Amino acid sequence: MVDDILRTPGAVRDAERWTAHNYHPLPVVISSAEGAWLTDVDGRRYLDCLAGYSALNFGHRHPQLIAAAHAQLDRLTLTSRAFIHDQFADFCRELAELCGKDLVLPMNTGAEAVETGIKVARKWGYQVKGVTPGQANIVVAEGNFHGRTTTIVSFSTDEDARADFGPYTPGFTVVPYGDLDALTAAIDENTVAVLLEPIQGEQGVVVPPEGYLPGVRQVCTERDVLFIADEIQSGLGRTGATFACDHEGVVPDMYLLGKALGGGIVPVSAVAANADVLGVLKPGQHGSTFGGNPLACAVAVEVVRLLATGEFQRRSAELGERLRAGLEGLVGKGLVGVRVRGLWAGLDIDPALMSGREACERLAARGVLAKDTHGSTIRLAPPLVITEDEIDLAVAALAEVLTA
Image 1 (cartoon, one colour):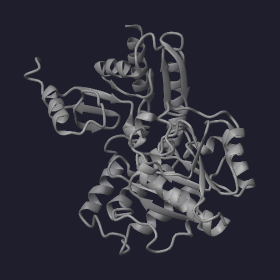
Image 2 (image 1 turned 180 degrees about the horizontal axis):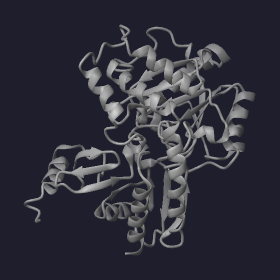
Image 3 (image 1 turned 120 degrees about the vertical axis):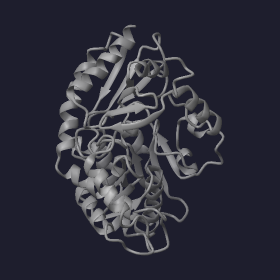
Image 4 (image 1 turned 60 degrees about the vertical axis):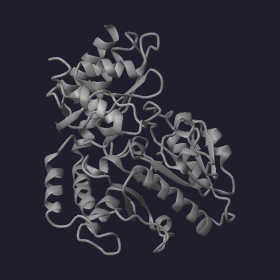
């Protein structure tokens, strides 16, 4: 077919014409999806190896989640938190139980969850720890990605995310990721929290050294500092466990959750912590019009129930080993580094071969969608419903790209 018959080129041009260029998407225009597969406007199918940055852990249009959304759409979609609806308590209780925490505060986006965690930590610091008013400090890590708000980018070390958005919010100390000594040295009497991703996703699926997270947990306990785990990408089954922290038996004081919590249908995020932490909030001090709305809760409670079976965590762990084996076989054959935890992988391509963007373009031409990050690194995060054969297909496509 020629371009004047295909719909994709025109759709790409229209998107470029009418959209602010804050993203640089691949020239693929999706019109439908099912499970681990996407179909574009011209009928071409693609294996989804990004899963909406882990927002689609359960695949596209999971029947149980779609059914819950349809049922709720016919009843009630929004009330605001001025009232209580009949889906709210079930969602909060079941998510709290999944997290092993007393309380849940629902929000919408991951960035909202992070902002909520920051506010709660500061308030806890002043009211419970006794930090000097206006002096609360939070320790964060280099290479972090916690969102795009002005406060969050204030402690980003990615200049693309940070440059020209100042003045920046104070109250953060940045230390190298994985360096427990540096983190410990950064904590002082005004430190209220350590905020970390247990695995850094945007940085290229960077797994910290063994013992780092338990060390962070220990020093936070000893120094009376909250340990906040941003599990927005890494949590809810992605790494072969419910939370990435689980791999080292670590329980943070606060979980920040999002992405997969909405089942790929609606934006849902949440903060989970015990009452001695989240209890510092009083009516009127924090909120969100859409946070914890009926449609969101109806979908998210089904997500929690899927996770409660353990099936998806097991699939991620087992299939992740197959993914690891396939990718490690390509080291020295175009790949110079591989990091895998469950169904989440960061791949460093020999920069002499191509950039990460070029690799993703070539993968798309072979029917596999992935996302590049810094330089020649790409990420794979397929839905947890992917099969062994589909994993093999993705690895074979990558092998072709690297050797073509």
